[in-house]
Length: 108
Ligand SMILES: [Zn+2]
Image 1 (cartoon, protein in one colour):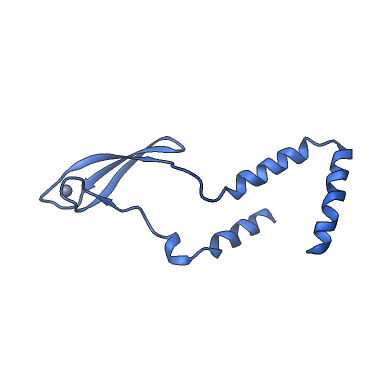
Image 2 (cartoon, rainbow, N blue to C red; image 1 turned 45 degrees about the vertical axis):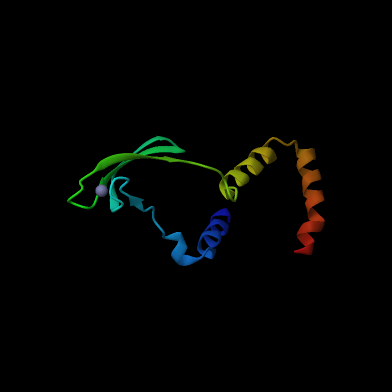
């Protein structure tokens, strides 16, 4: 059930923009550069090894890719937090949460 929600969420976003890829310019001549290798140091930090596509330039260089900030929180981590929280509840607390959610569920 969770999978379905994630899927519809993914396909709900504007089609062409999702497929947009990272474009790299050579810092020496401004031509298009290609990524030769990605060295992921951390989930949020990577070194990107690039080569200028202009044969007359031939510049090879390393760019840093770092995570900046979240715009919309991950649905995965939100669901995981809720699962952990629900598992930590006693049966009485679970019943209480269920009773609290009842009116909201009936309204949908
Ligand atoms: Zn270049």
